[in-house]
Length: 257
Length: 250
Image 1 (cartoon, chains in turn yellow, cyan):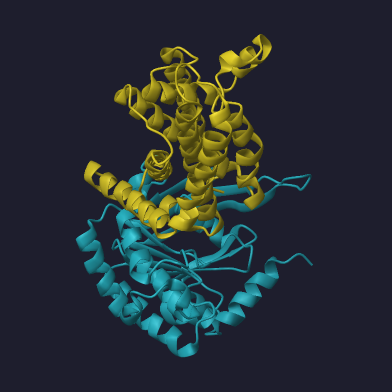
Image 2: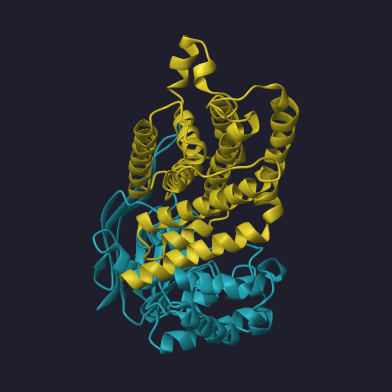
């Protein structure tokens, strides 16, 4: 395929995915927005008003970046895991595999779809949060880099899950039993400095802590973790996930027969 | 040049949970000439779909070689795949998508610009009698229309080789004959066609050359005319049953 043909193939995949996300917005965009709004009301407005400031910010301002990141992570992950598994299940994936598209382009197409959904949801949740609190941006580059890399990472993770999934149960196990606990324990609702020393150390093994803190730094200019460590962890996991996916697609594991 | 050249192709499916391995292809060697209308016949589980799967990169071969118009399916995979249009056995499109979108999306996967893809899709949908259904979700189509949609999708990038895996299964007699006319015309225009079917009269009516596969091995590979003449002008069905029975263990 020529570079122009590859671009057309990639654009075809991405356009289809964006059309799908927007067509079924009540399934793809609305649920995380409703969930986040409930968090803003319950934790931010009701409970948050009883909590003193953290690092000089109101509790609501402190949790908003984490809640946006939580929605981005869940949306990017669930988009790739569900679309890829569905494509395998109804064999529309075969039509991509018989086409001359190289494997890396198929991966890129799926990941871009997940990133698009993550970003759309992130922006909508951010807009909703402005009804509840005032937010200033401390560093726009850190903010954009953190949200973009995180959505890429979890779109890659969702794709790996989709490759291994053998049934619809298989696409919900990781989000329910791994992603949700890690997100809740990833410093969305609290600063890890408020934890006892043992749990502070344990928290450092949670990769989501680094992403939430990088994003929070972009908004508030405060982070529990040095910024270079946050992006280091993000890039490390991205490299691992890319390597795993490249291997799976090249060998056809979970993709071809 | 040969459209397909397969040499000593083997495929063993690894058994899971204590099941033994299944040797689906036991060293298949096969040649399909450019411009041919070729029948690949055999009972269920004989290995037809496995051969098609390997040629189209949906199945990993265990060993052997396969070339499509001279392009090695492993070394020149991308090039080999540009030559092939596949119409699989099972309906495999998104039932919520519109007919026109299913065809143009496939064209996009081959790198065809959107304008050209729409033009090409329109042509094919007209030729296959689906023009008035182009904006209908595919779930609203009848079985025969879905089969024709699969053919339109397989042809959208104008492949030199069209592989049809039981394209007329479940299609009524009238529509089947319409599809035969369409496929004959396509073959006359230069497209090489490989057909697998369980309707032997279909293979007899359409194909010039034939291979019969049973239990992973080719048992017959010759011209249709030769095969029928060598058996005293018997019906293909009789010859087929004869060959398959010979291969069965007593």
